Length: 136
Image 1 (cartoon, rainbow, N blue to C red):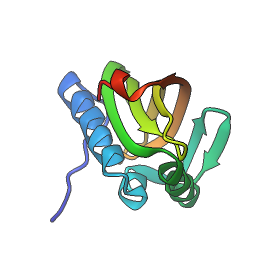
Image 2 (cartoon, rainbow, N blue to C red):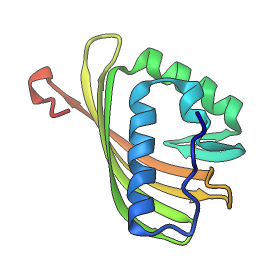
Image 3 (cartoon, rainbow, N blue to C red):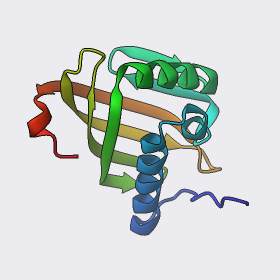
């Protein structure tokens, strides 16, 4: 089945669809599926890590989801213009010690002309929570 990419410049409908597609992919916890949304030479800043290229994205996500268990994510469109989208999101997970966390994030995305994400900059903060404080 052929998947049609949403191409920039984005309108509100296209930006909302991109955000939902990203949420769905990340919630799949399938690193290869997630990586397909990015250019081969994508550039990321994730917290204090700098990640370059799909291969590093896949390696990073495999490790992430071995450490962040029962991961659940919700994304929200914040702003968009031309080939850029800003997103606010939160996700919840527990670590190997069963400590729950809620992570808050702002992301800035930049897309190439083919609709693949070429740059992703994420600022993330983790808040320890109890299992009873979970919202997602």
